[in-house]
Amino acid sequence: MEPGDHEFERFFGAEYDGVLRSVRAATDNPEIAVDATQDAFIKAHLHWHTIRSYDAPAAWVRRAAINASRDRQRAERRRRGREAAALRTGEMSWDGDDVLESAETARAILDRLAVRQREVATMYYLDDRSVDDIAETLGLSVGTVKSQLSDARQRLRQLHQH
Image (cartoon, rainbow, N blue to C red; front, side):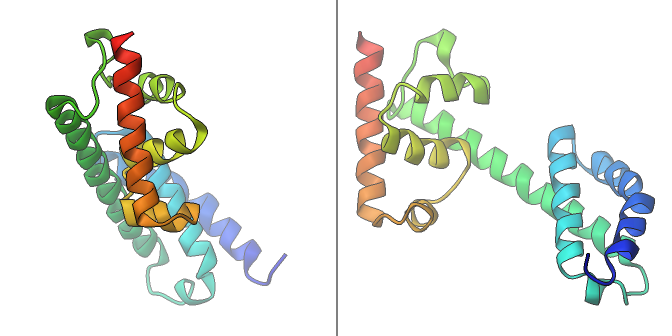
């Protein structure tokens, strides 16, 4: 264990529940609150050598968690907007029963795609990642990501027609 790990463990044990309560109050999504709180504590642990000297380390973590929850909520709204726009424009179309009501439904639909198409479409539509980010993450060119997204849309149209 690194020096300061025990100190951080005590800090985490003492502050986690309070930070989570604050973030839950700031967001209407309990899953986002938990994820954002965990992310903030991970950041705090990574930079504990600096954060421990702050006048109020818990306030720093709370602020980081609330900011992370806001970022996640914005990403979720953008993702839902893209899905709705894709359904309206016909870029993606499913039966009424299969409209993207949940991540589970969307993932079941995307599982019908070839592996690369599924990876790209999942990152784009469900994980709210940009084409550039997907390209960097998967080690592909931007053109390849766009082509895979296009192929995925075409394949989903074909599956829908049959």
